[in-house]
Length: 240
Length: 221
Length: 54
Image 1 (tube, rainbow over the protein chains, first blue to last red):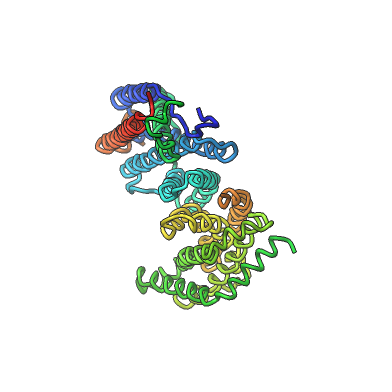
Image 2: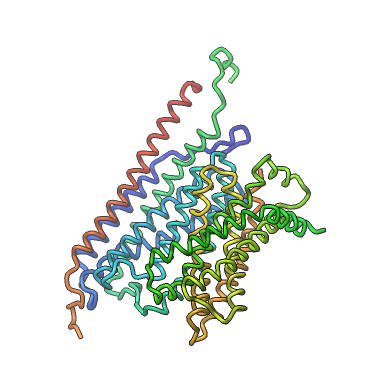
């Protein structure tokens, strides 16, 4: 807890993040195995459709991570507190990682399906723009040395970037609709629900654990930056 | 005199005094337009088809210069801190700067249009429409651009950070402005100009409000 | 029209494996990287704050 005497953040200890990560990976192993080997072939897309079992969960959680980042930015700006800045950094990093993964998965799905690596699907294109937008904010954080400024600026930038997302999506969708009328992999029929759900929870737990752990890293670094009081010589420490 | 008006006056005066810079930025944009044509090749059809895209890309690149310059004088001799000590709110400072940048970008864009017409055989009779798109597009670049220029002027690696932060954000401006300008040049049989213009106007409205709202968090100490 | 159970797209397993492989690599790789950074920061904290404690 932060106190008036020592305003530096104190990261939580304990292994809950590791438990979440482990549980998430286990669920992903189960769900992916089911989706890869047990689930039936889709009638039009064949086996390529199995990519959906990782692609859709990644999509949901990438959006979730960046939405959580937006929430952290709001709290950080309105209420303050180093923990929220640390969570913002963590959520953005995890979100960008998931979004990059999403773009790679999307390409690997598009190539056998449409014959091109990138088909300007509005959701994937918006994701790509978000990767650049939030990666830029992570870069901004690296180049600002003052922690107070860094926290305020990243929060402002994150809010603007997130507010932009629906506009980007809408404009790309419109821009693209004039050229192509492709359906994207969104409707999954009932037979395929279970592996999808399991993987969705898998990525959710994994993501939550990663954000929690990464936030601790950020808090520890902040702690170091905000500077511990210099140690007194041994003789003067009696009164402490 | 209202603080916003005073801020606008200050920044317009500043721009007038440094108008040689605006000329240099315009030359930069014009050379970018020339380079795009070298990248595509002397295919007149292709050049005309993509003229709108080249114009807005050139303007986008020029905007990084305009926006970075706009806070240059403030950074020298700690003028920025002096400004913030004035009773005027930071919001007034923001809108003053943003409007001045908007004007400069519109002028640079207007200067680039004849270049586009000549190099790419891409003219239009709908000059009022073109002027409108220029004004709206420049506004879309100026609002977030001024906010990020204020940020990066105070950070390290400012020349890299400004385009890095700005470009993903202004994708809707690029899309809409290019589409709208293209329709003006190549013809608009299905009447799509209005929706694109509305999208651009929506973006402008949202960002002029949001960035103004958030500006004092960017400059507070 | 394709019959039941026979897709329009034949095969494509190499894309499926690559997708799953890349997903695993990125997720596990990132998790490891966060873990390594966490351990490093914790070790640094213990080193720097130890002399002040009891």
